Length: 465
Image (cartoon, rainbow, N blue to C red):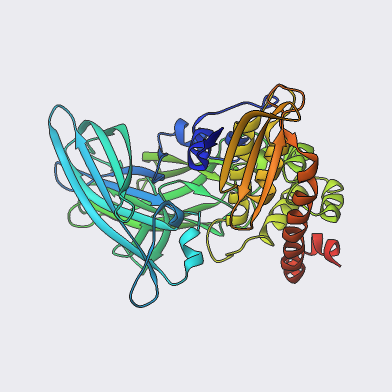
């Protein structure tokens, strides 16, 4: 008899990719490929986070480097405070070196939330940022985030190039989550992941340029550049007349109004033009809007297969009849919007949790006979959640190997038997009514929750009448 660590099982699943029928579900519903292609730092481990750096011009010989780190509440351990709130304490360490150590600093931070439910939010709820001053050159950047309550840490390393800006130049456009105040001295919060879960109403950006003091005026403009074929519609743009200050620096904020729903990969391009209209400098950074939407449109039947455990029967009937790209995106977004437990956050925790379970099932229980998420173990894992304990029992039940999943929190067990081999464990007959009962309890709660929110989604409202 062997006991399987649930944490180890999930950890191994998240780190070991498996293709199913030519598709890697994890790649479809994650931004991993986008981060890899564009050198956005992604740290996986006990404290997962996303990080990025932007290089910006200064009036002196050094270069301004802006470091941003984002992570979710559920990446940290929260503890109860004396006033009844919850607090997570973490540290960010950045080291930058070439042949010698150039920079090494640690920042201690904390984040407070008012309710326990907020401690499990999985969207980018925490953003750390810092400004550094570095000489031009090529360096190795290492960023470590440590959970000070759990004493867990994750580290990621990546080479960075710090340029020298002369004589007229633009820094990299900095995507922003939030801008407080107006004018060049406004405060801001960076957007390290470059990712928008849905089409934002506006894309906010910080632009920093260098030119001779007293020169100008200049025209600074920004626009989105589609990186995929088939993207149509009005492309958001912004422009403003600017002039350098007495040190030669231009620092301004722009907002590209985004009136049309859009998805896919774009470049955010900024240009600096002189008084004659000639472009004297330009820079571009990538961004991703609702990255999986293109796949959903082109593979609608496959997308519906993936949500079969979450959709009610009537919802599935309605979704199967939806046609056209815009209608399908609207239906998909609507389906998940009414399931969002915390609409005020930037991410949809219900959707993220569902596809995380699906990804784990796919990578853990795929066999020669079927996809992992279509196996009995995958189905139970996705619908009931992870068990508290898994016992592998090679001693036969009915002459065959079996597994016992225990849910201590609800006081029941599910047994799977490998009847025909090929690692194809199926629900033991006596466990079928147990599973059906537990599933019916969850389904009743779900229908009640969705019925109360159905008016927010007219497209699917009739499914709950």
